[in-house]
Structures are given as structure tokens and as C-alpha cells.
Image (cartoon, rainbow, N blue to C red):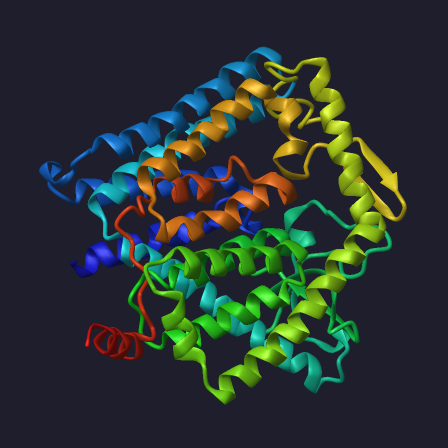
Length: 432
């Protein structure tokens, strides 16, 4: 790969993560789209057209996404009151997957994955510095050096009355936060959101980057994984702990690595002590998070939003009420306890009334085609965090990154065995 191609792919991957739900994408998604398409064209046309081979599975996966995009465009123009927003979103939904499709045909996808990993590892390293400063400065968030309050630039605010630190703060050296969390239920601190609008969305990118490290050859991979894990933990997001556990467990269980070999590789006193402490603290913390989530206004608000969306869906179940319907109007917020809830924006269930059951079916067909045609048993773990997040936690079903995952083609991916020497010895002894 030439230096020029590496530069273009680095820019392309950076633009990929700058799409909404990044803070920059929230502000200027059309600009990101324009540059993304330009760089995609440069990458494709920098290679001979004979190199661009289109196989049937890739094309079918792309076709399902384009069909979904055409559906939301026509349905939105027919039913939605926010037609300009519908057109802008549908253009991105239709054309970015086409660009991704062709770039992945000619580019080294492992290089793209490496850049994706490095971007998020660097952000996590910044957060680690900020978190250490937090303790050195007395465990008080107010003492941390704030570079910028991004609410002033965004021109909008998702501040929630009574919810601490619910503003986007860019802190030294380059750590974006939104909201507050409790470290071990003792110290109140900020929640890490990388470059995204909130921690619940940041965790998807961080966990995906972490899982990518098991399929991409990397130098100093243990350091990178450590940084990514610290970033995931610093989101203080319930869904992040669920996704991390399920993604990692699925990767280990469904990979070709024998479970007994993994157990043998990790069976020594030091590792057992470390794992015991880790799972004891982690399990206690995760249990506390889930229980507290269900017992507070936050859990009640989510359930209320699901119910409200389903009630709206019943009035127009097949086609829904319109893609991004009422999006351009002032949001109708409902107060549940101390929370002000936007009824439609919690999980795929929350937006179901907009695109209807037919739209939900088309969208799930995109997932079915992407996984059935372009994934394998070992790479299935890569898709789990994204699917769980969009299903119950976030309305990110039409984000560009989701379409990137569905078109990545991981059918040839194999888990890189970090315990290679141990496994080889085990295999030799078994055959002998």
C-alpha cells in the first residue's frame, strides 16, 4: 500500500467516526458527508477499475440497505412533516453505504480497522490522563482544567435539570464528557464520551474498537486493549458493561480456540487472583448499576418512552407516522420524576412508530443480510454491541457506522490467538 493510499484511508476512517453521533456530526453532518464522498471517490479512482470486484453477497447486503433508504425517503416525503430532514437523512442513508461498499472493495479493511482502533485508543489515553488529574486535584470535577464548553458552539443543549454535569465539556488534554457517574459508588466523577454526544453512544465505538483488536495484527496490543477497557469503564454506562461482557464472551466461546486451552493458559495463581478481584468488583458494580437504573426515574422514563412509542405505532402500524415525523418541531418533552424525556428517541422500539412495522422489517433484513452473508461464527461478536445498543438503548439505527459494520465483510476473520505459544504446546501434547 502506497503512502498516498494510507493517507486517504486515514482521512476516510476519521471522517467515518466524525459522522453523527459525534459532536462534530451533530453540528455539521452534511459537511462530513460531502468530504466523506470526495475522499471515497479519490480512494476508488486511485485504483484500477479492474481491481473492483463485486461479489454476490456484498452486493445483496448493500441492496438491502439501499432499499431501506429508498423506503424511508418515499415514506418520509409522503407522511412526515419534516421533509427537509427526511431528504438530508435519506441521501446519507442511501449514498454512504454505496461509498463504503466500493471503498471496502479496493482498500485494505484491516488498515481501516487499525486506524479506527488507534483513534479511540488515543481518546482513551487522553481520558486516562484526565482521570488521574481528577484524583490528583482532590477528586473534584470542578478542579479539572476545561478547555471548552461545547454547548456554546453547538448552539443547543441537552441539559437535564437535576442531572449533574449534563453539558458537553472538553477537558485537558482532549477529553469530552457528558453527565456524571459514581466511581465505585464512592466518588462522583464525569462520564467519558470520547467525541460522541453521550457515553451510551461512545461505548459502542470503544467496545467495537476493543473487539477489532482480536482480529487485527497490532503492536503493543495489550496496552491498546487496556486503554480501550479504561475508556469503556469510564463511560459509567450500564449498556456498556453488558455489551463488553457479551461481546467478549461470544468471541471466546464461538471462536476456534478450545475453551480448555484458554482455561489452561490462564490457570495460574496470579491471574486467578486478578480475575477474582476483577469479577468481584465488576460484578458488584454492574449489579448495582442495573438495579439502580430500574429503581430510579431513568428506568421509569425509558419504560414510559417504550410504551408511548408502541401506543403511537398502533395508530399506524404498517407504514408508521413518517420518517423523522415532527423532528423539526419543538420536541414534546414529558417530565418523569427529574427527567425530561423525548418520547421517541430510546432504542429501535422508540422510533418504530416513525417507520412502521414494514420499515422495521426492512431494517432487520439489512442486519440479517449483513450477518448471514458477510460474517462468520468468530466475527459474530463484532455485531453484538451495535445491535443491543440500537435495540434498547439508542436511536442510532440509521448512523453511518452501523452500515459500515454491516458491509465490512468479516466472513474470513479469525481470532488472533494471543496465547499462541501455550496453545501450540497444548496441541502438540494432545497429538502426542
